[in-house]
Length: 213
Image (tube, rainbow, N blue to C red; front, side, top):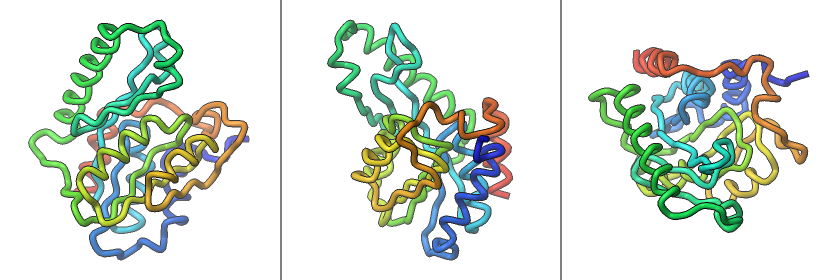
């Protein structure tokens, strides 16, 4: 049986594991759109912290879209998966096309989710970076590097579920890593949720508005 009913329920469980941060001065919660935002919303609500999004896009292999050759995050942060790039079969022109496409989508989402509202200032803050789960950790690594470039006082990565590979990768970069479940036999994030339907842009906007209100 899947341990989590849906993302909001997973967020409530994750919030209980992060209870020691309640009332922490300078605490901010960042969700990775789209699926990480319902999880982050519940964490922010339980801890009484402001909520924002950190935009990250997977750079899919030109011939196998689901295979991540890297990731791009707000602030033009690029992270590569050397294992995939080293396997060959991709030329520079193909890589550039993928980067251009995902950069355009990143900018579209920034506008769709925030409009004219500026992102939260992260310098000197305690940042909880939240997603719905980690498979390879490439996308989260890009997010971590984007946050660290803004010099937070402390960076905590928190997810309901993670592969052991991703846990090791992100633990080495963050000040603290919290996962409710970490599995050696990790198939996909979705297998840990009973309902893993797509999170739409409208839901992201509504959750950000509810958190701000």
